[in-house]
Image: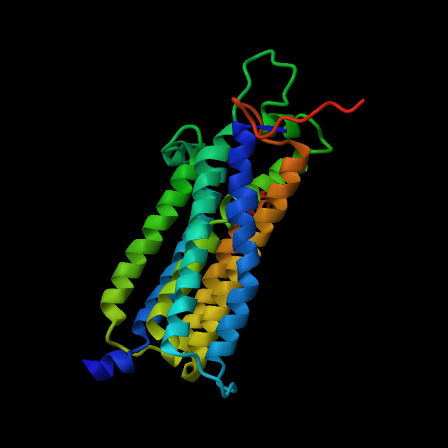
Length: 191
Length: 111
């Protein structure tokens, strides 16, 4: 069982940071709705509010880690330009996708949208974490602010989902692969 | 001071929200500019391996953070009309999202 370094970095980008972020949205939405609702007789304790602020801050950190690793480590490998005369484009995912009219849309729409829309998530989540840190105790009494927080969470979720979906599909059609090989486990051949 | 902390004005929240929306809209405008004008794309190429994306996102982050600082200074001790700010922020976010969508970019450029 082995994996290349580029594969491993892409896995950390999408399946560790990105997937953890997407999983965290449900908890954030439920916790913000429950703790900030004006209809709810239950109110969060200061310790619970602090915990939720930390949770939202970790989400923002995950979003920043995902976009920065994607833009500055994975994306340069994705858009690498092959030397003239290269026939095997498997190490050049962007050129591989663009070489076939049946796959070029994954780059022209998928990657072109993903590379930009993903940044709405860290920007929105940073604002959410800040607002919650400062106004958590009063969110139940400030309906427009509660709506803004939930709207920002929804925006971040949609942008992270679009980026995650296209990231997964791009990796199915033209995976970023290469570099030194990491051997994770040695197995026995089966007859 | 204790009363201010217990019952803060909503200006800081409005500044955080509106600056995020301005940054999001700026991201869309810069993405479109980088796509439409090769000169701008070259100017946005701050780090060659990542290409114009490096400058597009860095510039949007700068706009967002500068906007946040400026609005915070103006609004920290004030109460603003949050419903109005929400509507403006929603419009800016929508514009930013639309401007990053490649078919819409192509439509604007007449491609």
